[in-house]
Amino acid sequence: MTLQSLRRWNLAGGVITTLTLLGAIFWAFPLYWAVVTTFKFEQDVVREGIDWLPIRFTVEAYYNALFNTKLGLWYLNSLLTSLAITVLVLISSAAAGYAISQLNFPGRRALWWIILASFMVPIPALIINHFVLMADLGLLNTLTAVVLPQLIAPVTVMIYKQFFDSVPKDFREAALMDGASQWQLLFRLYLPMNWGITTALAIITFIGAWNNFLWPFLAITTEDKMNVTVGITQVTDAFGVKYARQLSSAVLAGLPVAVVYLLFQRRVTQAIMLTAGIKG
Amino acid sequence: MAQVELSNISKRFGAVEVISNLGLTIKDGSFCALLGPSGCGKSTMLRMIAGLEEVSDGTIHIGADDVTHAAPKSRGVAMVFQSYALYPHLTVAQNITFSMSLAGVSKPKQREAAERIGAMLQLTHLLDRRPAALSGGQRQRVAIGRALVRDPKVFLFDEPLSNLDALLRVQMRLELAKLHNDLKTTMIYVTHDQVEAMTLADLIVVLDKGKIAQAGTPWELYNRPANRFVAGFIGSPGMNFLKGQGDGAMIRLTDGTELAKPAQGAVEFGIRPEHLTIATDGPIRGRASVVEYLGNTSYAYIDTAHGPLVVEADNAGLKAGDQVGLVPDLTKSHVFDSNGMAV
Image 1 (cartoon, chains in turn green, blue):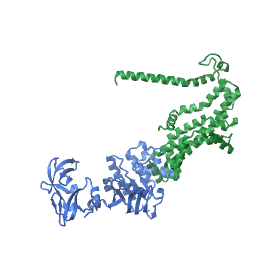
Image 2 (cartoon, rainbow over the protein chains, first blue to last red):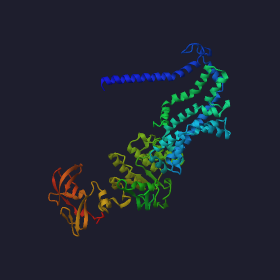
Image 3 (cartoon, rainbow over the protein chains, first blue to last red):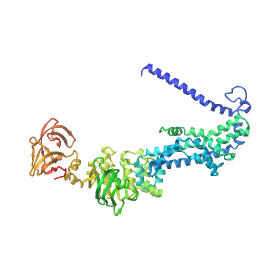
Image 4 (cartoon, rainbow over the protein chains, first blue to last red):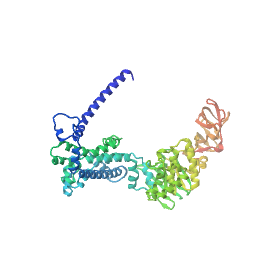
């Protein structure tokens, strides 16, 4: 590489870095503004001019969100439904992926095409059907209603199938010689051998379930059964238009997801790559 | 321990028949090698015995039991795979006792078994390691340990040494021979390496295109090949073949050389490299093209009117380019008719 081309390379690198940095600032600014606002007094929030940092620091907004709303209960509802969705989605997807990948049964190909086809249908397009079904089952305003429609996860099935396909058949045959049943093959061999994928999928499923708004918003109208994402919309009614309090509820609602992301950053990236079809 | 009996076994994949009406009895305690070139059906045969492949026709008996349609776990067989197939997420001890764990045997009993097998196979210090931290030979021993722990009636080996380097292969071969001597269990061993088959087995079954070309002891296969395929397949370097015409009392080769070996009609004269002697006045004339020095002996490749012939030159100081004569030891030569069958 000549000196000239090296300079050109450095210049291109510099321009890309600057653009990326500007993009990051542009993206992160609303988040920064929301967090800064939560530490301000309401009067300071609506004051004229821009305060980049709080003039007077307070955690009153958090205190109110935590102790004058049902945020704790909403957290619990979110936790219960998200955990249930994660566990059930992983077990059912792993079992379906295993069956399609490893078992020979009539209709296997048809089942695979149905799963692929269901991947093409956006969930919001089915939401009225889900609502009518849950209403007919008498499950509206229950946590079960929040969980059930979210168990449809064709992408997870596809990822498991893809990974189970790549397990060399010698392992399966060795385990069969050792006396393994199909369940033992799945839970003692295929899942542990693809543990990294399960972890990645668990994290992204949990985050998706926690952040989901539209379906829980439709399925639940009782405050006590609300998830945190739906619950924070009630803070407006509780406080009137109070920006610091509303934003503090939003920050608290998003906090667990942010913590999960920070703890498992690498796994989340891997999972996003997997769901985008890039094998990590 | 048990005898394995295959009766009229056939295996078809769609319209392709890879094993055709094959019958074979492997005696209790025998070490049987299934030998043949790639695609001859030897691995398919082993997999049918294991229960990993359905039989299209025929029956398989292990001991007194008809296991033709039995599940692999119910056949009383254990298999060592070419790739070892060690579960990467389990330790050596867990790999060895995986079958016990599946059967719900208590942890202390599993550990006891792992330690017993580990001591037998010199794996004691490796029991808590994972397969990724083991060498090829150690992995091979773990795979054998996993088979041993099941105390099977029959051991099945599918080219177990082919992933090892030459030195380790010799060591493991010796260990397998010792293991068979100690256990006296029936072992069926698939290989395409005739040295492994010759050194380990007391019964070698040579397969060609899904059929048994010959079954016999290593001595029989080497010294009394039933056909040209077996004669050419067994032995390294392989047997030399020279085309000729027999008149009842002798064979006249294509260049007119006469050999005092009784034969009739169009035949092929077969002679192993060690049964050809270099002599200045030998009847088969040629020129040395390559001389391979192996330390204890040498192999010379001689270009003749019959094509290239290999001769064990016994470090005779032969050089490439030398003109030589070759004398065949007719008492150890072979003759095959136009159908390739030994005369």
